[in-house]
Image (cartoon, rainbow, N blue to C red):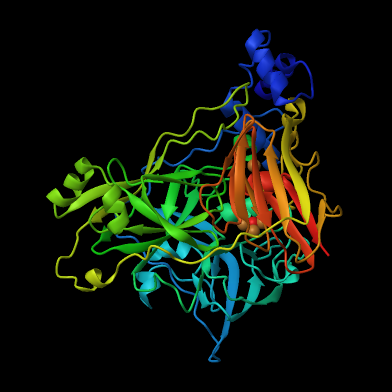
Length: 583
Ligand code: C2O
Ligand code: CU
Ligand code: CU
């Protein structure tokens, strides 16, 4: 009766059945209530698992999931190129394709195949290792959905076929598509069903987007099982079209030692799931060889992991774009860049290890020496330590993740490359006009409530016989309530500029995301001190730290329902989402 003992211990320690995290912290300070019972995470995992395994005897505790070692996946292979979704249409200006979501097996751990859920073109499951084309020569890239590569002005027509055992949708993250084509949770495609998504990409929409499922309560699971893919829209007058492009699609993978992708445990739900692996284009720690200056498009497709990217000491890069396309001016001389879950960026990375003229001017003498003294240099693309204040089951926060190497980068500037000389990064990339005076204001407040007693009961299943039902006891809220599909949270008029303030009254970071449009961050306020955003950019996702208020300018152009939510997908599923009705 270990399970029962644990419950008794935990409940007596918690004393009150419902309390906010502030109360928790106070208890900690007073030292009145030891929460040691609750910090026993293996116990919590076991309890969580028992709800998903009805065959376990009543009082028994199933062993927690045995995770694969952090080096169980091979590393060091050359970075796989993303496969591209083929255009089935011969008509100019029309991109027509099929995306099938279905289970597909890949062997990442020798002898232990993993069943992913994957997007692929029509024509059935991609056969692993079958020698028919470049994609199968690099099976790693198959884990990521195929790249949809289109141009401004194109009409996109995608038939979605759902061969999953549960409902799904495809949401076009960041794109200004009509509300009824945007894969809202209210428009699910049933298992075995299909539908066509159709939209036209307006001028000015060039940028780095992605697509992923958005079904009610099941987005997190569908994404962590592999359903997510990149989407690039190109402009005819792209000032950076001459640079070779490299794509880095980051995804997170939690893998059991038997190759299975386990369901979320209690901590995954609370903080958002972070696996032991971060994959780049489907592979662990690949090798990137840079021989000439490159334009990198980077996607954070992880459920919850923050990526504070760096190339290491003395290596600078230039940011040229955000979610919704190019910046007005390059931001040179950066050494780190934080990408919250859901965010994207465009960088210029120089073969010399710095990045372009402007960056080199800003480089320290020391690092310039480093870059020029050796023809070949190595760097490690790293997710540096970033403290997003993950919650512990006991009071307080968990320590931040240690720095994690994501890819090895080898700089081998090719002196014979004469095209390089012809490419000079323009000082001005495009004009982003301010949106102007607001016609309305909106307020979004993030809050949370933890009910420890309820957390210790079983999850309520939302997926029939499948494991991974939502847990009870954790509430992540917007404007005081969790998501209710019948409720309109906010109403906007189309064409009206609005200023939104997004305030984080919780104790952890949450990335705010708004559908259907790109917005401009105006300022960020923390502890009564407001700082104007130093540069103008188009974004659809912005991180909001605990105690911070971020102010944005935004405008919706089409009538209908739009979602806005925390892009930690577990939080979204748990109800940290609202509906914006545009009239
Ligand atoms: Cu990337 Cu509502 O989603
Ligand atoms: Cu979105
Ligand atoms: Cu969140």
